[in-house]
Image 1: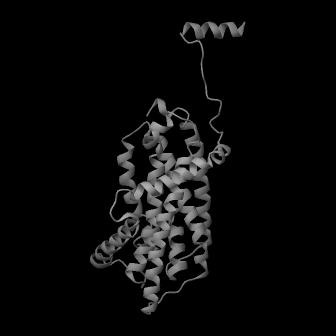
Image 2: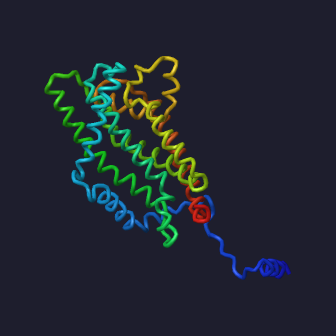
Image 3: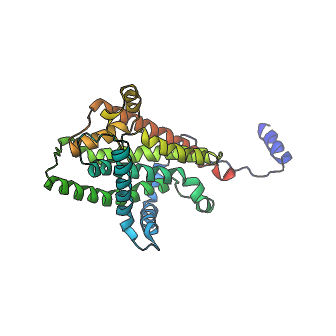
Amino acid sequence: MEQETKSEKTAHAGWTIEIKPRRRWYDIDLRGVWRYRDLYRMYVKRDIAVFYKQTILGPLWFLVQPMLTTVIYMFVFGGLAGISTDGMPQPLFYMAGIMLWNYFNSVFNESAEVFTKNAHVFGKVYFPRLVVPLSGATSNLLKLGIQLLLFIALYLYFCFRGAALHPRAELLLFPYLVLLIALSAMSWGLIVSTLTTKYRDLNFLISFGVQLFMYATPVIYPLSAAPEKYRALISFNPLTPVFEAFKYGALGTGSFDWGGLAYSTVFTLASVFIAVVVFSKAERNFMDTI
């Protein structure tokens, strides 16, 4: 009797078949991501090839960009503003921050544009959408690796010049620090991508906000150089312990705190969980709103 009532309602609405997604909002298709690993590898290769396709300098842009940025920072922040680098050579100090920030920025932007940039593909064929941001985080590792070689070259140069560099055992945490940056950037980007499918104005606000966020992260200054009244606020930034840990391990300057690193880890894991759940829910019906 109840079935007849539903049929009558459906017929009255003019529909004969109603299709609903089988997945629930908390179902995360990780098995699907693994099943489509060939597509993931294809996306990684595509991202790397597309970046320097039809350019004259090609992959050299991975080096030119941080070098020019370092020179500008030396002039503006080191020269005009007189911001301390804790006694470290300015090129080396700025390059350490720029290298990590560029990776965060690239992964965040690619994750934040997942829906808007790939709508034409998502609307035609099904595959786990998480493949796209994961491939973006992976392909950007190449850029990070090239810039790391530039950083090492600078490091050796200043070592021969007799600079007081004191690498510490915490430098071994570098792969883990990169993982935290990748997960933070991807999760925050995914949350933004679900919002910008409905509210496009957020694109302008987010791009502006990311630029400001860099100044709330110890990229161009050591945490010790921040005014005392703002230091606690900057420490609340989950990226602060990560950037400080790398500079502490590589240059021997700055601060290192296991508690701060644990805070960054917990914050990142919580962000990843929220992002994946929100993204999984949004991917079911984003084509209706984009």
